[in-house]
Structure formats: C-alpha cells, structure tokens
Length: 403
Image (cartoon, rainbow, N blue to C red; front, side, top):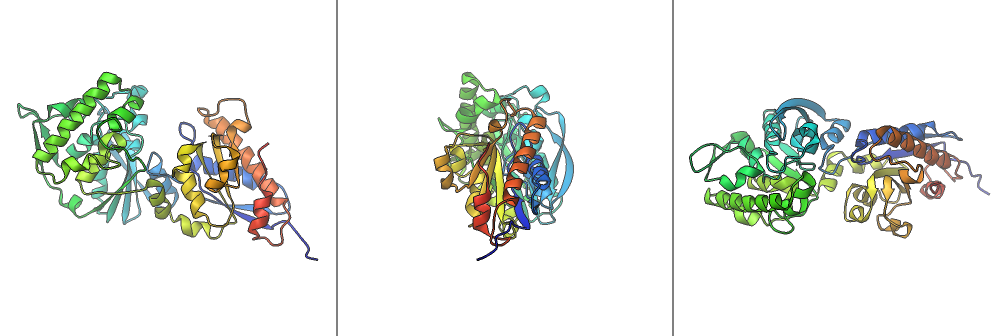
C-alpha cells in the first residue's frame, strides 16, 4: 500500500488581471501571494507572480512587472494639462497605453469632457517610444476619455487638421465636424516600426454599434453629444478618404475601429495590426513558459461573468493552463457553478462571499480579503493527501469550496 503524504511544496502561478476601480493586477497578485505564503500546514506554497493585462489600463504595469523597463514621459492629458505618464520598453518592444496618458483616470477632478477630451497625449507617448528606436510598439487602447477617432493622436504624429479658414484645429470630438483639409508630414521612424493594436473590442467606428453610441455614455456623452460625435466622425472619415488615405472609408467598418473612442481607427490608418489583447499579452509576458513549472494557476478579475467566457483574460489564462487546476478569484461572480467547466475552472472565490461590505471601491478591504482567500486556499492545498508532490489530481481535490 502506498503511503500518502501532503505535498512538500505546491507551486502556484498567480496570474490575475486588475480589479477595476480597486486594485491593480500587481496588488491583487501581491495580496494573494501574501495569504498563500502565510498558510500553515505540512509544507509550503511557492508563489510565482505574473500580473497580467489585456490591452487596457494596467498594460504598462504588467509589462514592467514581467521585466520590461519603465520609461517616464510627460504628455498632454485628455484636456491638455501635463500628465506624468510612462511606457514599458525591453530594448525591442515598447508598450504604450491610453489609460495612463489621456484616459478617464487622467481627467481633472474626474469630470467627463465628452466633446473636448483628446487622444493627443497617447500620440505623444507613441512619439516618445519611437525615440527609443523599438522594433515594434504595442498600443494598449483601453480606458480612453475621448471620442475623437484618434484625431488627437494623429496631431502628435505628423497630421494637421485645418478648418475652412486654414486654422489648425485641436484634436478632439468637437473639432471633427469642422475639418476642411487634412495635411500629413511623414515620420520615417513610424514607417519603419511595427505597430500592434492590443484590444478585445470589436465595435466599428460609426453607427448604432459604433464608438459614440456604445462607449460615449460611459464618458459623459448625452444623446445630443452622441449624435454630434457620430456625425463628426463620419465627416472625419470622409476627409481622410479625400486626403488620399487608402481604405479610409472601409477601415471605419472594421471590427475594433471603434475601440478607445476611435483611436483604433486611427491606428489602422497608420498601418497597425489588430490582435487579441488577452492572447497577445499572455505571449508577450511569456505565460506559456511560466506555467510549466507550476502545479496550480490562480487567476481573476473584478467580475466573473458572461463577458469572461467570451474571451476575457481569466478565460484565456484558464484555456492555456493545460491539465493543471485553475482557481479564479474575483470581486463577484455572476457565473453559476455549473458553468465553471466552460473555462474550465476548478473553483471560483469571490470577495462578496467573505464580506457584506462593498469592497469594489475600498482597496484596503479588497487586499485584506484577498490575503484571507489566499491563506484559505494555501492551507487546504497543504493539508491534502497526495501520492507525490507534483500530483495534479491531488491538488485539484484539495481546492476548497468557498466558505
């Protein structure tokens, strides 16, 4: 008869997305790791941390956590004020994000400016990245404050938009409908750099499923603003076509052209390639290699729901993790237990099961709950019977149900 003992060491890869509005991916990973390491039992939990992003806010931080260098730059915020931003660079690839340059979080006082907000700061960050001579730039588009079709971004990258009087227009939503002429000054560095758009948004630029209609209200746009922005973007597209940009009209209908208030459209005009944000960042951060030495993978995000199943980051992590068990930790879950196998997940833990308080806007409470969850998981793993310390089946059996 074989003697069964608990694993001497359980190796856990902690690979979460952010808990939006509460904790960054790095903070989520740190809190879970602290709990897992504090677990008591006949053995220990070894934690490897891999904070992730899917092309939205937190993409630069995730790249830095995986070994990229952070490079600081000052750019124009969404309403023109200076913003201290940063990009990530590893000598070959630069990661530039909308959120930390001209995103919603950069609005002064948090006040939405649906017509005045501009993407210029993102273009300035791209320009800064170009000065480092990268082979490629990954453009992370989530969290934008503007709906300007990338007009602001293009003003930083060699484009001028003139009104009927020959005056240069600001690059924002309110200026879209006043464009009379588009002028371009080619940037040689831009032409020689591979551009990658990392986003999982599939909306076109215009119409009932376009950027103004779907995302405008999240940025403070009322019905009249939405109509103004949609009309302005249609005019903008026609002027881009008149300026001789090949495929300008057709690109407005592309899936993803409406991402980040239409910055996706401008990126297409620049020749960027669109990729799945979740999948691309898993590759960029070397997830496949990192998972191989681990017994269990812990992932998560603020909410586990139908959108998660459609391909958000935790689903992409789960589907790449192979035979090892996957645990998801979330602020809340709207996914019934019988559907966990669709990702597949061994267990889902939520903060709402550990408190009656609203932790979504309380970082301190969220971190404390994650530490407690981590410790609960770790102690059950360490006390499980196992034939050997790398037994996947025994680790799966050990994952506790939430209290």
